Length: 302
Image 1 (cartoon, rainbow, N blue to C red):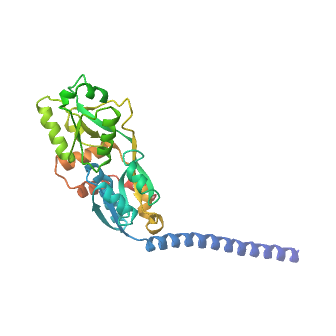
Image 2 (tube, helix red, strand yellow; image 1 turned 90 degrees about the horizontal axis):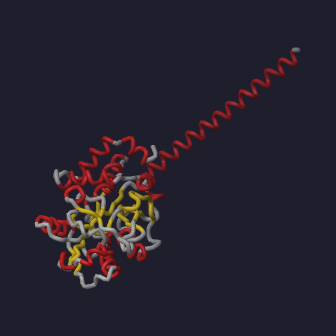
Image 3 (spheres, rainbow, N blue to C red; image 1 turned 30 degrees about the vertical axis):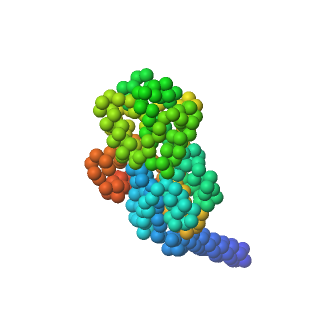
């Protein structure tokens, strides 16, 4: 009986020692994982530049990213430039991210030129509405084909934004597709184009022009998209492009760019704040982040 009791006691001691080793190993793995995460955070490159092209809607992801990443200890610079310049900068690692890539159609020439020289991290919006529009009072004009039939009504002109933009290039393709080569494309800045549109609309005249969402033109003006039976304008996704090494060097930024999603209504409300209320985009971003911290945490996978 004494021998048997001693054997039982020995087994209990051995079992206890084994459990101690198992628990110690588990705790060590957990602590190691925690240490790895902390070391990864400490070793991150926390200086980052974000490319911003000259469109109000693009200020939303640019400044939201800036405010969110600065909360995470990053030093963020917004680099402004034309679309072509920003694609070149991204491919040469002159910037770390470009938040306004329209794929696969609108920016097709840039995507082809710089193929393989950067990575797509995430998609902000899918199947964006874009094309050409006219005032809603033009009851007889509902399709791009109708524009050609009423050339005199439009003075033989189509208004488009700056010639280096994807929309201006697609406008040229549209003119060819619909056999409208006798129309003149009038390129200008977005603001100048819309000023012309408003001037014509004040006199109830005819005007056809580039239109897209998100943009406050659809809240400020009574306008309508034209149908596109020949599919000159194809729906695009708006994506975030990053340098090939961003995921390794700045994983927090990469996680944000991979998960950030925006809505048209949210962005257009933001744009009204900029244009009508003269609010600073960074202030708008700070207010939005403060009011939506749960969503921000999901984007950061916290």
